[in-house]
Image (cartoon, rainbow, N blue to C red; front, top):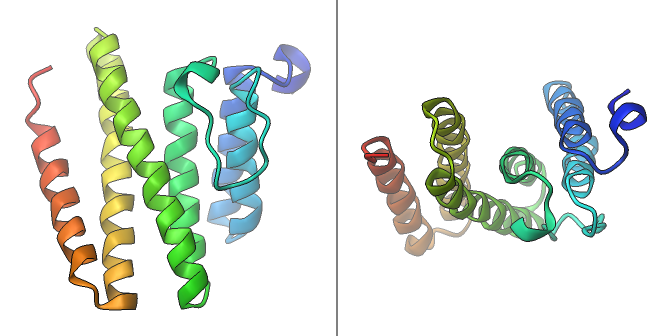
Length: 171
């Protein structure tokens, strides 16, 4: 409906694809959800067209940076979920993509926090940020579990610390 009303490249179309992806997640159709989240990224851009799940658009390529944040958070979560269904080597690849995507979302949230003035907008950003920190923390701990490499446990600790510190930001 949104695509017919607003076109294939519009934040509302992108948001509807995120909602469909979330429905797929709830019904354990993780591969389909991941495709929806990637499609939501292309729907929020006039120039980004990649269907490759390892790729993300730049913020400058997107129509709405706030919608980009939502799409990235959802995609990072799906990448983490799918990693738990894979063997060790595939899981590591999906976990790395999940962390890269969530880290990108976290850096975008910092940019958005500076750009937005209203408390309501900042609350939306804070919720997205909280989810991204949780994904990074979980993915890092899962990588530690798979590899027993202390570097991943240390990274998880850093994400936990940064998440707690973000609550006290004076914006």
